Length: 221
Image (cartoon, rainbow, N blue to C red; front, side):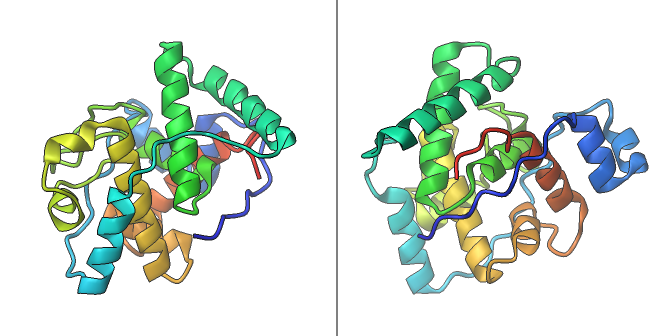
């Protein structure tokens, strides 16, 4: 899968300011008391061609542990700088250092594996679950990336409980978003809407874009 170029960082804006700029004051005011509201779980179960199902099944089943390895020392150092910066900014939401580093290692690995921008995946997780591992939406979507249970049946082994496993959840979420991005021919706005089950509406994609900008400081190319 091709890598997604990292956009320029937007510094100096806090979450509320970003949301206000992206969505407007009325939307922000309506959500001000619920910044971590679970907005995921709207994905619609759609028929998949056999070839697509087979490709997605292979993508989630491939045995590949999230090992961050570099041949180039400069890229290794750049990754460590990103990890330190992002870990510090995530500390309030994930106080345990080991759990936080494990989470970020896996997000970096799985996003790159799927050809997605890491800041985008972090932004999506922020909007979907507020970085809560065991989050469940009103319609049953699970985990960090709010994966709908039907995906476990369609492209996994059918074990819905595994969607709470860190790497399994992130792998499913990244593979599904990549699938939607391919279906929408690279249109990220429409792909995010499809991920949320609100294709064509602006609220969800704009919320993810706003959250993404918070994680772009120090992002790796």
